[in-house]
Amino acid sequence: MYLCLIALTFASCAVSSLTPKSNEVKLKSSLGNIQGSLMHDIFGSLVHDSNNIAEGNGAYLREQLLQQNEHSPISFPFKLNQFQYPDIDDLTDFKQPGPLFSGIVTFAHLPEDECFFAREPMDIAIVGAPFDLGVSYNSGARFGPNGARQGSRRLRGGISPIRGNSRSSKLRGIDPYNSGLKLIDCGDVPMTPFDSRIALNQLYRGQHAIHKHPSFNSTQFNNTRIVTLGGDHTVTLMNLRSAYETFGDPGGLAVIHFDAHIDTWDPKVLGGGISDYASLNHGTFLHFAAEAGYVAKNHSVHVGIRAPFISGTDEKHDAVDCGFKTFTSKDVDLYTAKGIAEKIKTIVGQRKVYLTFDLDTFDVGYINSGTLEAGGLSSREILTILDGLEGIKLVGCDVVEVSTAPNTVNSASTELLAAQVVDSMLGLMTVFDQPE
Image (cartoon, rainbow, N blue to C red; front, side):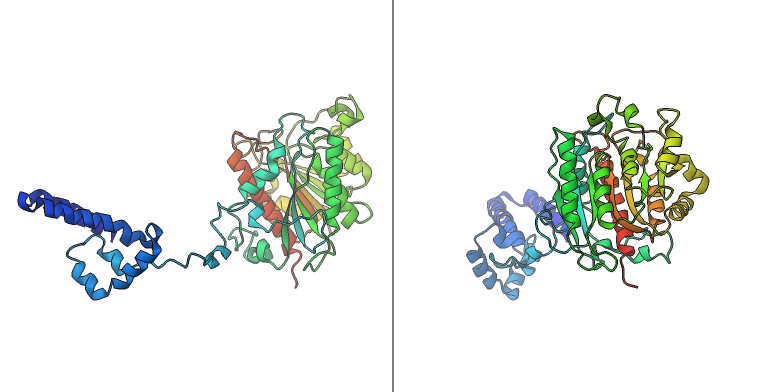
């Protein structure tokens, strides 16, 4: 139709150039009327008084339009197909979801609620931990919760053709956002940027408040489970503590730790031996978690490790004192992504699991994070490993070191991958919680 209109326009102009001068004024006047009415005929009451247009539309009987065709060839198709706008006070279409790029940004367009004071039932809560006072190299993860939410704007439900590693996988048929479980975005814990002790205590109290919510439709859990958007990796200590106190068995939670670094380093070494305050940071939090009994020793595992050890005792301390098995990034080449997932499941067994994911598990070309290391995993490898964990008893998880400070290089891909990891976590949480 539009090509025809363009052709008619040029034809009219051509006629104008060939018409005798005596008819030129009359033709120009006719074309002016046509051009003046074209906006009217396309947009109608959108740009004209609605009452006048209604009267005009009432006069447009089809027979009359056919007679007018020879005078207004350009606007004629629009006159035959007048668009009727809703009444000015009719807002029923506003109840439908808007475009994926619009609206207040919650994770995957989930409903937002105030979760720290009320005790409304819900099954899975998304909560932000905007904190990066524990970073040893590159700050910026305080913007991570916002970044992960921005990266999730194209998520809103539906069956993914790559969720699950086989066609027989229960994950293949899961839509985490419409599974019958109640998912809520609780916003961010208000963590002060001036004192890590107060900020981490705020996070612990916020996690504790959310964990007290009863579940809504869960088949497996009596309390709300939490997915935390970090924040540097220090925040996991508070997340893990609250999850352990809510769901933990004697002996701790099995911890699956995706990271380029072991994060069980000696606090006197990585903290510099300066003070107890400096000893708790994003590379020592697992040391303290193991020491406090939150970690199930010999049932916990690192995945993606490739950063050098700081001291000669690190490897023994990590394996013996803290109880972690280790798979390096090159082990993924050796055993394959699906093979690594099977080995992880063997290690955690039937214990309840906390999964923490440092974004630097991805290779450097994909993301920006607190301490980047070369030789990381691809996005497809990571999604295959995560989906291979189908069936684990996942009671809590987080994605951390999401460094999306303003004007950050790779910010868009960092946001997108952080959101995709959370999406995979939600798949694991919901597939375990479905009725048989």
